[in-house]
Picture 1 (cartoon, rainbow, N blue to C red):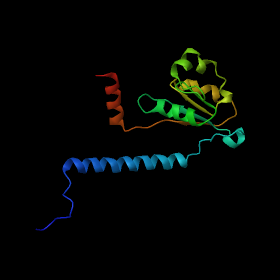
Picture 2 (cartoon, rainbow, N blue to C red):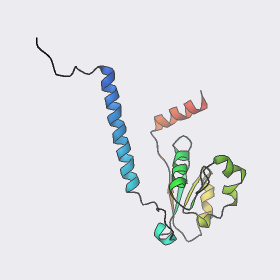
Picture 3 (cartoon, rainbow, N blue to C red):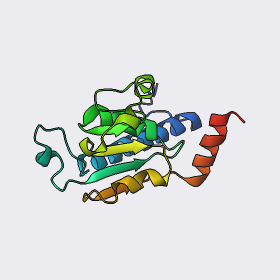
Picture 4 (tube, rainbow, N blue to C red):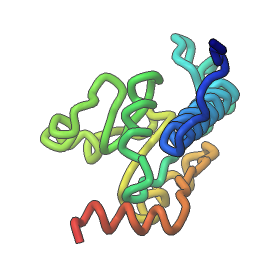
Length: 154
């Protein structure tokens, strides 16, 4: 009797699962590398050590691009974050909205601002003598369209 010790060939479904797992591993490792190499200020007690160039980082929150998650993650991990979906030490959206945090905030105390307001919101920082660096999230246009359609339920 001959015993075959070779593994059986993979089925089509198994190949897809393996391919998806490899893709997920690649995506996570790429995201981790970009976070580690980021120049965003880290938590520290000395403000100059946190943000030596005194840059105001702005996140222009475009619907269905992951901005809420980004705002919450940054507010969780960094100091001096002001956003309509997450402040440092305040991550509950209802608390931020009910207490009008975005309207009553002195943005001089913020190093990162995330907002869904239109472009005129950023005009107030023009004469502050502080460089402003705006970040706009990008997403594949077709994926973005499909995400918006699925969100609206149409």
